[in-house]
Length: 217
Image (cartoon, rainbow, N blue to C red):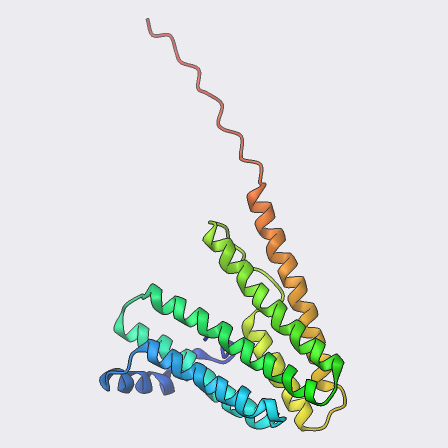
């Protein structure tokens, strides 16, 4: 999974997680296995608890599962290899996790007949997937789209804050957070598409004027 804890000091976390990564490698566990296990943890939290309205329990499980994102990265660094399949697997598991998180919230509130919250959760799910897709597709075409107000870490931190507000009984806290995430994601989609547009239709620089040859005859 992506940089959910990028706002935390990685230097401090490295002192805790590097020994864990080393132990897992010695036990024969691969970074890809850790990536999949982390995603399974997210699925357990989302589908097993969030769908039944236990949002705080789901939040705890999902947050702990997201630490695997740092562990598998530490494992890969210790092995000193860059695996393109690992990058593909990581990105694919991110999409699965995002779908489970926001989909489970939508499922729960559909059962509560809270149509606005269902709409907000589904819009977060849709726009979040498109934000990631536009960047990936742009890079596949040779452009860059690493811009925008909000990315996956901010979306997950945001939904976590919304879950805490819900747990503390703050009226409309989760709904406001989700609508804000959806709006910021829409802006980010526009920013990324605009960035690629400028690159695709940029006027090439004028070629240097030809140098006039000196007659040496």
